[in-house]
Figure 1 (cartoon, rainbow, N blue to C red):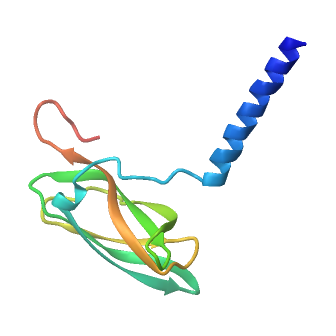
Figure 2: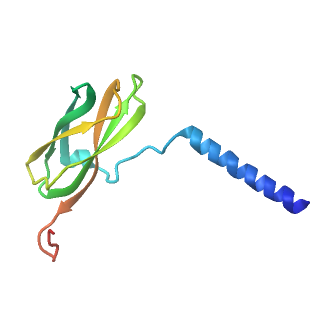
Figure 3: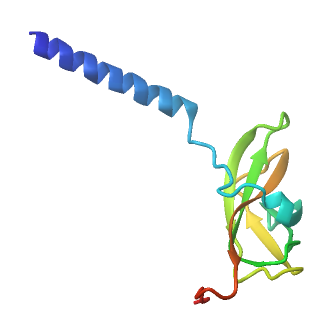
Length: 133
């Protein structure tokens, strides 16, 4: 009898934890690298393409090394500034020092405003056996 009560208590606790996690919604993405705003400048604006919302803009590499595997995070914001949705944007190719690249991200739904952050990047460093493949 004690075994059954113990199992029922364990199952109840797990269900409670799962329902709390579902009520909070999916985890919010945060940039994987810190300080992206020190090395890159971003400009963006909301647009509309055949009735579908999107965010378009430009990223510029202000640092002395090239960057590759650059990804941007587009936060869709409500009027109070809370994040309602997020979209990842992959930039093709390398972003060399002093260069810029345009991006155009389709977002799932319209938002009051948007925020674009550098989510991830890798520096391209010459020498030391690091070959670009």
